[in-house]
Length: 343
Ligand code: MN
Ligand code: ZN
Image 1 (cartoon, helix red, strand yellow):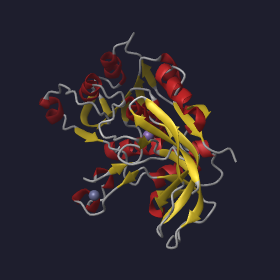
Image 2 (tube, rainbow, N blue to C red; image 1 turned 90 degrees about the vertical axis):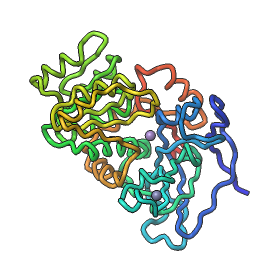
Image 3 (spheres, rainbow, N blue to C red; image 1 turned 30 degrees about the vertical axis):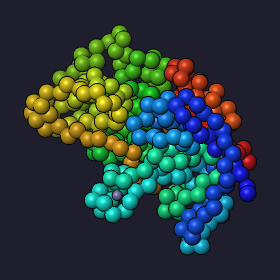
């Protein structure tokens, strides 16, 4: 039997590169040879044992690029050699949410790398409908960044952000910066908050109009001043703490929209009057719905800046070093990529 390498979290804080059989494909599947994969905060949660949904042992990873090396009999939309990125979610197709074109909110939804095995492995067998073709002109490492941008695209879609809207992004970690890049590409005016100055400097490069470090500035005062006391049109809490969610809501003005991306079980304290009086839309953003194709189009047109957010690359065999770097160096790291094949 042919075997391959797969990065597996055996139990919390225990990572192994295991030999497992190369998967076989059925008629509707394709076999993808993985080229690059991105490490996500949620992979770190699985590794740390803090994911609310993961079970073990688990092959982690859900941000991937690869090349089609085999196709099932029924597959007509792809051919061997195509470059693709991979959908991380599997949905049931017949629950209420699936019928409402919200497969990401499927009651039986399974996420690769958490509920089921993910993409940190040399080959992946996947239904053809869950792959998205992308131009072969785009390097593999950049292609693996399509998925985190789909999360940012979901925030755009859910908050209905548009040109000239004012937007507050709390947190300039990878997701906050992806959201900033996406908002900015849509010509929204962006303010971003973080306690790490190097991240704020990167945010400036990506087009943030104002940056705020709450260690030496007052967020409320700066946002009030910037919006003439009105509050922002859209806010996205990418820091995901009880307190930052409260700030996002309180700094959003009348008719505004607030995106929530957090996993915490701890409650925030939000007066109902803030929501009612300003008729706010507070929207949860869970993974994404149908965002791959529009994001791929933006990548192909060069409308986004993934290269600026890719800070480190490691051969996959050094995954432990990559994780240690992410745990210990929030100042210099943004997106960290594992490379599977240099051909
Ligand atoms: Mn991710
Ligand atoms: Zn469903």
